[in-house]
Length: 476
Image 1 (cartoon, rainbow, N blue to C red):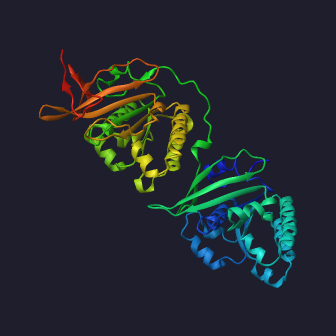
Image 2: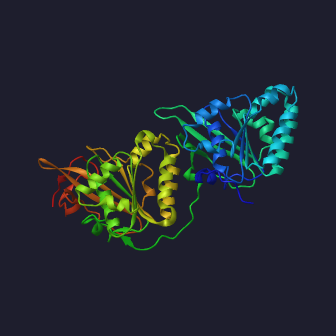
Image 3: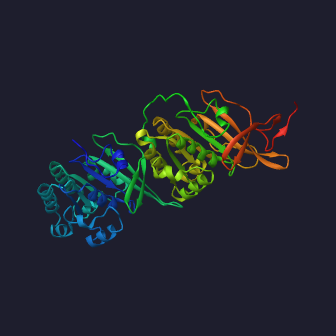
């Protein structure tokens, strides 16, 4: 049986393919976690010309207030209100039904069979506990869920249940699926999440997935660690970096589908090197993705233009995607979603993330980060794309390791640093690591020019690279 799509690819993925017709799903969470918005958003997403959605309210918000709040969201279509999405208030039935939920059950079941809606939402089911005891509620909910299931409609039960209540209340024992929404207040941006506790008959994704509430409604971003990439054998061969002199140090270029880390302090030329790597790919007709946390799309286009690279035309032609993620809005799952969209279909061959240190620091998920980074690199490698990632080191003093304990995840590590050249400040580059590949171990001049960056001459008779802030002459 085909599943009912939620209208969101990531949410369908998390749920194991969407919602199963005839199933009962409880959506629980504290105030502000997005339950009501999600329930209404699903109604407008699934309702069509042939099947409707019904949204029942109990004693939460009035219909006029609900609709007024909906006008702010892009998923709301006023013309669908009534013909496709119907709002029904159960308050009068509950008020006149005494201590018995049977009139309410009969009304919901009748409408499910007469109108054959694709989705039925009750907001909030927890309110029903104010009218009957635990035993009567269990019997009533059993009648409701079993009868509505035969109509083929998905029954969504919303409520402000705690985790303890989810372990004991009848609503959860009768449910085919349990979705737990969460809300965490933190600076500078509050965090919301979605976890599928239970979903019968599906292989749903584990873990807490990020939730954003925007003008488009509730947006779910699947947790990348929950996705197991297929084992693939990367294509053989090397790709040119586009940086003059660097390919020679790396044995003819970067091995295809490798993850390369560029280490260096601010202003040393990491971003220019990445832009040059992308420019080389565009010149060869490849499709590229550049993700930046500092430089905006306009700033990146301006830098490329000053260096003689027409990124604007490539972007207009769909061969270049520039994605600026403001640091204040940065979260790990948002970045992963951008990368997943970029590599879908296997068309993208070069990806840049600038910079990793900012991502790790701003996301504030230190315990999660190692598994996340491993999964992100695996996803990109599986897609056959070559990844360049920058990470910032200190400007003065011995080289630090911003990714201490994680550098093994990268196949190649290139270090760029400032050096003292008598009374001037210069730049030096060296290849620290290349997995399963021979490379040059020497230190070379690194130049920033009007046409990009380039590797210059080798530094002779100097030492101090690993232990001192300044190189010094050594005895020949």
